[in-house]
Amino acid sequence: MAETMTYTVPGMTCDHCRRAVSAEVAAVAGVEGVDVDLGTKLVTVTGEGLDDQVLRAAIEEAGYEAT
Ligand SMILES: [Cu+2]
Image (cartoon, rainbow, N blue to C red; front, side):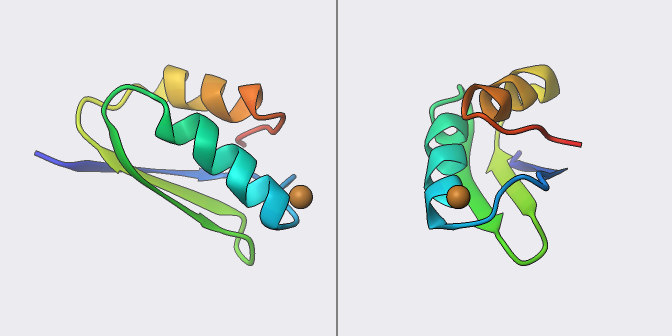
């Protein structure tokens, strides 16, 4: 059963940010898709068995903070 997690990441401002966050989050186990909307600062993650703590850590690893 696919699930969706959404995070607000205010620090994302440009395409570089989008790619950095997408790459880190996409590497997390269970993640099947990542969508970054720079307008709303929303990161939407789809996949199976998603772990909130691990996803937040991946966003931080990219250099950003999920609020
Ligand atoms: Cu940027």
